[in-house]
Image (cartoon, rainbow, N blue to C red; front, top):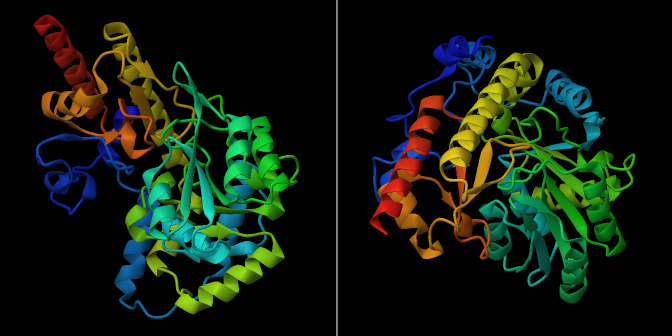
Length: 398
């Protein structure tokens, strides 16, 4: 679909709809009038086929108890096979009300209080919260940063695992906020360390479908022909793919029989057996009919990124911008243009932007910001122009 036509059909105003991104700015940032580019959802309506399916279900008027249909299983299995070469069996699938919720469950099921859990920082801040909220020891290992390109420090990972007797590793693939789509050889090295050291891997692959041209998402479970599948659990969802986060539904994939048995035994204790019928329907229809929409969204995200990168490189080359391989979230290093303790004042008070600050993702990333590019190109333009304009004022005042 031509870009302007797609924007006309799907771009939507979200203010006044109880949107966390837009209507909670005063609570979150202390100002209701910021340009909002923080939390990871989109300014676009979900595919029209999903909307129509939900309308039909709602018009039926009954929201009673339901079961998971074969059509749902088939849609999930086919999508993962066609898009990611990941062959899932029906019996491996379990469900949760969200990827983060599932991670909380896994921490409780597969570790004990005071056990060590590893994350690679900077990383999605609910990972930090999940570990600390469950009274586990949070072990962090910084990714190596070379001019905005983040890689894994394998020696440091293994050292941290051994020194802290790590029991569980929470992986982010593709990586939020570094924008990396991990190569198979990178994943293999990491997963080999975890297998060798008997560390269970939880792989959050919620951004698996938001991949830019020239890159390919490799599910951790198929790395080296599935060598590590028995030592990991994958969590994914259609929520990032089709902008469905509010329907609170995600998929859990557990191929290891013993892990799955333990999961089933423990999850009974909180009676988490039902699914959101609308969330499941939206996921199914998205996987069946939403590919065209996803391709248009990815092109738009890539255009937004290319504009941001081009304009900032031209006007403020000191800003280091991570290359966007996957996700719709770009990570910017502002440390060469502004003191780290002044970044919030500059970005929020001067530029009038609501973004995610680097220190939310890891203690050593103050001075970075994360911006959401799944939005109106005019918002990206306004944000970039504001950064450039305010930086020029700052320089002239020095």
